[in-house]
Image (cartoon, rainbow, N blue to C red):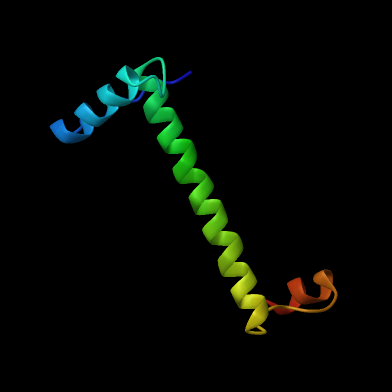
Length: 73
């Protein structure tokens, strides 16, 4: 597993330490991994919601995918 070193402002570092003390995670690294996973989930949800909005607005391609790929740049 790769290791990434990220400097944190003191208030964020304290927040991470507090999460460990409260039992949210066993280590500071676990707190950060959970935060990154949550961010990734939020990004995925935002992408789905944006796609749903595009469908509602009629901004979708319809038809044979192979034909559409020949037409699109």
